[in-house]
Image (cartoon, rainbow, N blue to C red):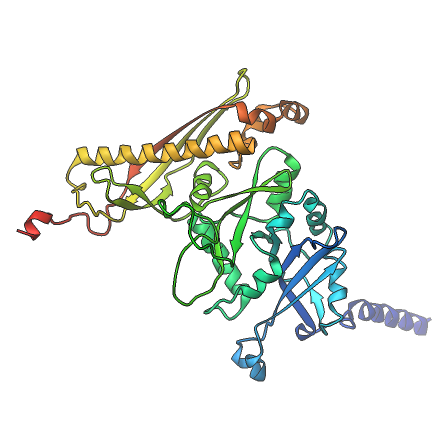
Length: 419
């Protein structure tokens, strides 16, 4: 009996050893090829396939502690046709020795041609099936073919490509130059069928001349004119999606105005210029920030639904080329304040008119507020926000509060300097 008890104890002790010994399938980091960005295109010669481009990062590149690996290239690029980007991982192993992994995939890059395709939605929804693709991965649209885009993207200072994309996208969100664009938001807005989705717009192809040279902020990726020796890639503006299909591109200025009207978006620092009300030859550089929360009132009961939006804005004056003394002249400050409000209201109304007349939908997230007016989901669906939005009566008011007038508010009198 005692021997049987001892044997029973031994068996009980041995069982956890078999359960806990799960290292039999362990693989080292060096055995994986980590895809940090994946391009998706539609081949022109085959409508039933898609073209996949992998940007694979070398985790040991630039790492002095890795010895000889520090001299290895920081990335590897491969492009090929396939049925989808799920089975494409195995196909890539035809030429890549390491196991393809999506664990570090943070950017899905889609060419503009494919994004405007009616069938784009069929392929992008594969991202909801693949377990390794995170829902917070960024969705970016490129003007050109994604293979060409990835190959032409050559950062000068950032050795590791994943760091480059992370920093430039975060900075674009902070300044309002590009929208916050992720897969979760794309799927949510597409399935809700009420609003427009804005995706990051980028290109490595520079236009010969900007179409909006009179307004330095009113341009999109590819229209920024610059010289010197730096990367060719530009991140500027937004790709507009309606019902899962790209329909247009917003400029930097329009994207920033969207940030001001959308309660779910916040830009930390918007630097822009306004006409000088005291001298039309000059423009005033300013820093804009939201001065609180937008007051949005939506009335869905009227025969013509209405939206009244009040936008509080804090404006700091950074330049003063007309050399008007605002700090000690309250009347001139009132004139300046009024000119800022009128300029912003005019631009906001122009953008709203564009969304109502051209897009027939809004990118401001107002439907999230409107649906609270309905008791049940069927009532909200019967209202049909997207159908009614083009005919809504929308009123915008901007409440500007002047902040600092630069680090030094006082300025000298030009006549005294040149006496």
